[in-house]
Length: 136
Image 1 (cartoon, one colour):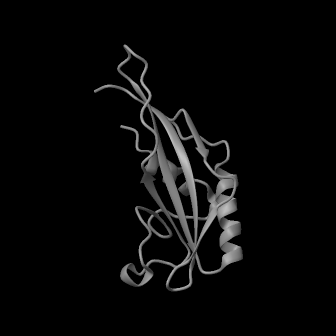
Image 2 (cartoon, one colour):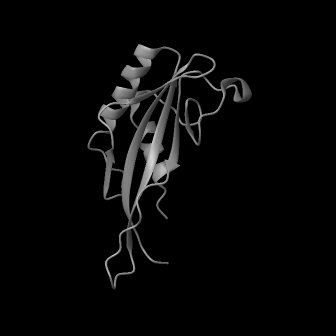
């Protein structure tokens, strides 16, 4: 079974120019507080988001599915964080993981969702992961 969240996370993990390591500063799931989990301040979180309904051609059993995958980058400073978020977008540009039909972002720039209570900056990027799901 195709897992869009893990596929995008692994694509990021495999790009040495981004310098993220799965389990160290690259995580699957929602943004987690630093104090509760002793995570690094500068970290990237990858999670699935609801998106469009599946497409199916009448008489066919397979569906074309599109899942939104959100990247949330937490960074201690605004400018370096924004540049890192742009680096992520540029590195993923035109890359589609094996097993997917297409991968694209729905925005031209990372969204700065403001500093959190600890004054760390958050940047969001949403990707659409398109794949064909075969009937069981």
